[in-house]
Length: 65
Image (cartoon, rainbow, N blue to C red):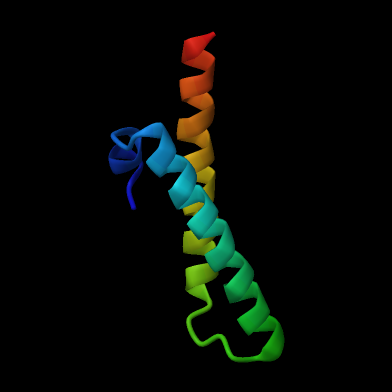
């Protein structure tokens, strides 16, 4: 997901996507530890998505203040 699309999300949906991404990252790390992960680049994609989501979330909080 691109940052441009994330900015347009509602606050509740943004939190939901962040939660889903964190769960996916946990599952990917577990798969990597057990040797089942084939697409290792997905780890970096999910980590970057989490960072983007958190950036959008923090920028909204700073605008509210």
